[in-house]
Length: 332
Ligand code: ACO
Image (cartoon, rainbow, N blue to C red; front, side, top):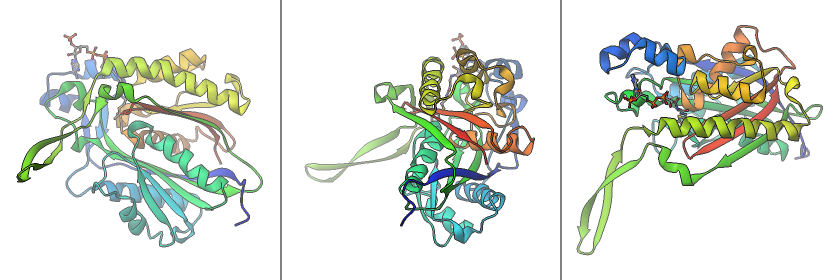
């Protein structure tokens, strides 16, 4: 291929969410909590919850199809699909199923797991395939159904998460490069702050050889630690990315953070000296949808006419791992 060094344009966006909405009032019937507690601590009011027939693959495919249509492309134009998820329908991966549901018959597809950092990690991964000239049109999806993995009797976690999917289409360009800079980080020494761990039992196979079998325990989180980590690390990552892009804070039109907590978004904006009007947030409606939250919020902002062609967006994901990442890109 002779496309080496191609720039990246982001030319389409789409999203999908389950029909059912669970309100804070509903939650107060399930665990000891209140609308006042949840809203004042997180900014959340509702979240969408998948029913039995709504699979991760279908949600992701719906979002991808909408993004491809928004980009004025056909599914057969797509070369690569990167699906960021921690909650696949199948532990072997759901990306290939999504590829077939979308009808992207030429595309190769794979899953990427980085929890709430997954979408930004996937965007950066996709950009490498474009920059090296390997692929022209890439769909990046963030999708999660964490409602299937929380303990619905644990009020410290079950009130936070919702389900959904969002997708963008990235395209190689010889004329412009709209992914201006990025940062990626991991710190496994803090892994215990946020887990969805495998829990097993020993089973003896033959004398001297045992195997482990079991299933995954629900999400556990040290909320205060994750909060502290996010407020410290996310502004730092965005500042580094801005520096690499040769931008100052006044150049940023929108702050598009992983939608974990409105208070985190406000604190990060304050540290960056960005006015609150520049924060893109749909946390009141969707809660924390993990890898889906950034493209879901982007899609809503595009549909509301907030984000316009040429706008500069600072985005950042953060969460389990612990992982965190930032990217500065221009829409359209
Ligand atoms: N309703 C009522 N009370 C509650 C609830 C609830 N749903 N949950 C906890 N409480 C109580 C606690 O038991 C505690 O009571 P105590 O003081 O008697 O012990 C009190 O409220 C305060 O609890 P904190 O955990 O200190 O509450 P905090 O203000 O820190 O808010 C929250 C908790 C919202 C989870 C916050 O810490 C947070 O947003 N953390 C970051 C989470 C995050 O960013 N996750 C992102 C990654 S997700 C991923 O990667 C999959």
